[in-house]
Length: 451
Image (cartoon, rainbow, N blue to C red; front, side, top):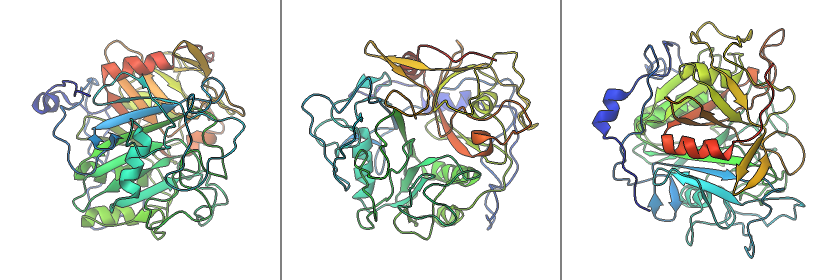
């Protein structure tokens, strides 16, 4: 695929503006020491200014892969649900390259659509998402995971739903509030260059290297025995990281109280630069932070980290941080549901540090692909959605947003810590008009009513 043209790095640097007039000056939770910066880099700006993605550079070393040998700055995969797009496509044989056996799920789907920094318009994938090593055709999930799993890199795997494989102290099957509602993998080489892969799937991945394989459970998407993680829709997002980016992502993970264990070699292999190692050792504890952390990464992607102790509706918070822009979201929308909101909605569950009021947040309940309508609510059954997606709906700001968190909780008291309000999570906002347009089409359809 030919790389798309983007603005030059210099032009991007001149256009960058932080997310919102929010000065960040707190440490990234408890337990950090050694003179590291107090927080992610963030300075006040008003009004918010739209940014463009940085120009692509020659990609070498560890990076997200579209398929074997094809690195990109970022990719996004949407795995469809089992009702509307069942199976993996006609004639496709299922495989489990990272351990396990194909499971006899009554309903499953590993059909997928994908986009990348090469081509930001979603296109139909072929085969089973995550079910190959990406040798023959694009399988961004499988190719990227294979690069890490069968490589010799440092890594952290986190998931609030490991289902005791591995066991996490203080949790049974899964870790609830105030642990972060977050899942993913970050990996890096000795210099600190690497990638982050955000996933929305419970129970996968559960190990970061073939040299320390997962115990008591499979480690291939669609082959896990403790949860059918391929019945409802899911999303996956991978992003190339510089060493400085890696530091910011690790700070964001600590701030969000992600579930991991630095002492378990199955899910953490520490190494590389000393400051990176120190940040990794700070993970796996519940942060006392009450401050959103933000950072613009080297690719132009904007990272937002919500702490559990900031008890606000998650996607209203994202709108505020991005300057009060209007959003449409597609998440596991279920009890307790946060309704769609309008420009006049003022959440009672709010925080004084979020000085910009949120814009309207529309809750998508159906989406469309290839002429087929599919469900975007949360709930039991094959026509539901566990991805956590958002798009800006203004004419001047063009963000595709990939998050950890559902629109579940409360807009107003008395229980402002309800559900996702009282949990941490991360969001990656990609300032790309082409991707935003394509993702907007994917989640176009019916909406939850506003209240």
